[in-house]
Image (cartoon, rainbow, N blue to C red; front, side, top):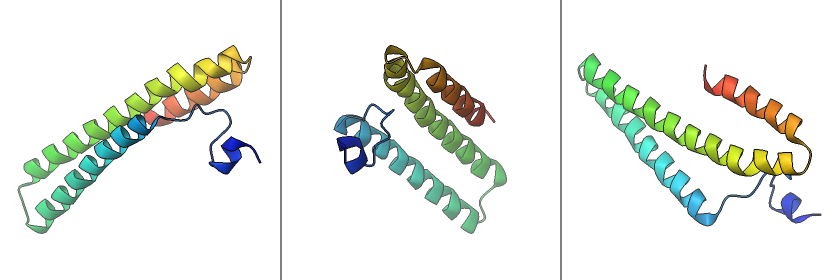
Length: 103
């Protein structure tokens, strides 16, 4: 069993650093708190516009996390694939996820 298999890491992936993981988790936990806040706003029957503004902020925060991951993927995983001669497959995969992300 290779190191990647032991760690459940896709062999096409360049593993994230501990700092990168901590940063992403911190952002996601903040977003999770925002979602809980919106749930409370709905439970408290708050004004629709106030709820919608918070939902917009959550969407923007999620988009930022996604774009940061996308940028890292291009700079590490896609560039690695290109260097190793697997660029077409990696670029096709990237384009699929960009299409999904932009819906």
